[in-house]
Length: 203
Image 1 (spheres, rainbow, N blue to C red):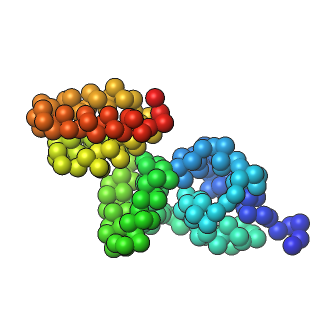
Image 2 (cartoon, helix red, strand yellow):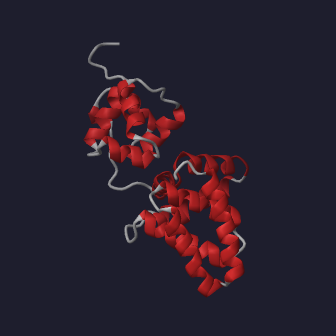
Image 3 (cartoon, helix red, strand yellow):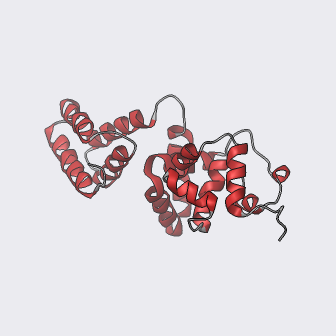
């Protein structure tokens, strides 16, 4: 290989710069830290096919483009596809755990997994009208009122902590729902919050 052919780490940095993304922005899009992005770009962190796929989605290119030897070979679409928007939204909200959940679901129920990515995340979560924190507040409120979605409630409470909501803010949302959904449902949601808090890395 000649010296003029960029390595994959250099290629990632080249494409990120061409797309106008900072390392911090790329990290948020793929659900990781800036330190990991720096590791991908300097060769200090192993780059699996899974990470290549996530980086390609964020950079709006194909994984094979990360192996290309010239920026002229890259085509940047004007906007991501519905599936790409959905995967980016899942990565922003739920991180690697969310993408892993979808991948596991797709092994047995591929059509349903695609529907989950495309509609709620590709069409709704990807919209600009609300910031991610506000969407998680709305989601926690709705799941509290439903009263029979503890598993989903724990997932969304954990993700709410991940994107910056505090434990007290989450508790306040659930307490307010007691006014509209009743105390039994609010108590059930508080039990889900307690479980999510216990499993969270964020204080």
